Length: 260
Image 1 (tube, rainbow, N blue to C red):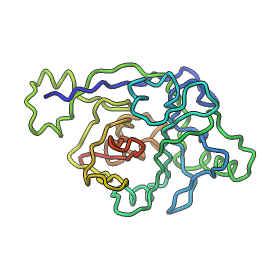
Image 2 (cartoon, helix red, strand yellow):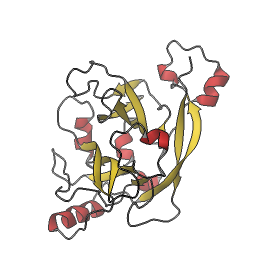
Image 3 (cartoon, helix red, strand yellow):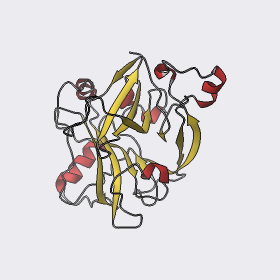
Image 4 (cartoon, rainbow, N blue to C red):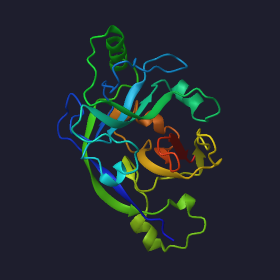
């Protein structure tokens, strides 16, 4: 049994744009897509404004249809609202370090599926201006990068760390080994150790629910020098990815795995 799954790799926009527009994903920057009544989210431990790490526009036609099909309640493209997967993180390593064990309810990140205005809010309100300025000038700020669209990568099999009972040939594994770095779907790169919230918070869910690997953010070897603060922060202990509960597709989990 090969467990093959199609992966998609990013095609980055050649120019930076002030907002997401028709692009599929924005990485980094200081623009956060929020609802009109939302305050800029802060870390529950240190109260520092969270950094917008990745914001994937599921409504965009440049996001693969096979990915969009997994997300519930997607708003159609071209509307005033858009459905997004958003990951906001605290840039302070100490806060992140105490969150990764999932031993408490305090998280140094927010991971959600949200329907928000397709254009970012005006920063005329003082608290939004203050938060934006603080992350632009502080540790953890990452220059904005746009993913315009995605192209089909290879079909990937399970990583060798999960291949307890598989008998695939070395040639087969070499052709379908999971790739490192940012991608949609496929299979994730694993290490010897694993850190995640094993339980789905929805009532009546099995203690170890089935999950789908949605977005692999990458590991600390996947990023350039300008990314070493924010995106690589989430990968200090190895590869990092976003998983989805198959029974409750609105529930997302941030997961890490590495050779600690």
